Image (cartoon, rainbow, N blue to C red):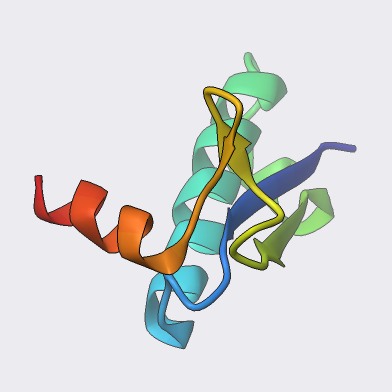
Amino acid sequence: MPLINIKVMKGSLSEEKKQEMIWKVTEIVAEIEARPQPKEKLQPHTWCVIEEVDFGNWGIGGMAITEAMFKAALQG
């Protein structure tokens, strides 16, 4: 059975967005993995975990991401 592990920056998703992400990602993974069977057979057995990572514990290009950097990236 699939286990989906999603990592996001702490506080970047509302509870509603987390639920939407869990639902949509689970649906897509079950659809792909269950083929040729219907996805509904696998969806109830598909695990999805969202882990929130603190700022400073996530890095890119050798630099730890700060909250200000994250917000600036979202704004473009």
